[in-house]
Length: 209
Image (cartoon, rainbow, N blue to C red; front, side, top):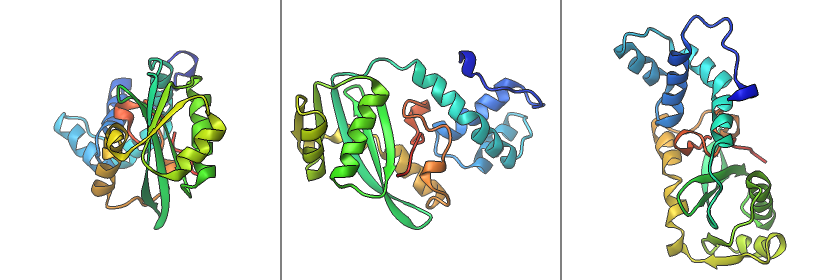
């Protein structure tokens, strides 16, 4: 990861063990205790609290490294939003994927109005440093209003049936919600959640606004 490589000084476990635990947690809908059990089966004794600390410390650094290596996004972007609950409060998880299913960005916001859609579109172009040829969304009117302001020269296709790619990308989020039986902490606090991180775990860079 170049200059962004995290420091392992003071850790008694090998880098391979640490990175594998972090990968397991963010790649699959597992709890910290389940990662602990999987490692025990491999003869590695590590507590779930240690796994939690590793995920908090190294998750984002790993995700950032993957982001720097991701390919240039395709010309068609699929956008969608779903509601999630964090600490009992309803919020909206916005997600964008390209034509190949690669997650471009995710963002947690309190609303799904025009201002929220506009913020997400602008953030997308800033993070990807690209402008799509076509954006595909569902029939939420906020997209149309924001599209006219932010990227009027980009073709906009609004049809629920065309947006399965983005909707399917939400599945890992729903899987983790079922495993964790609801999030006990805001999604925005989840580490290692860069959009292009392992399996694009929601994780994965979520920002609450």
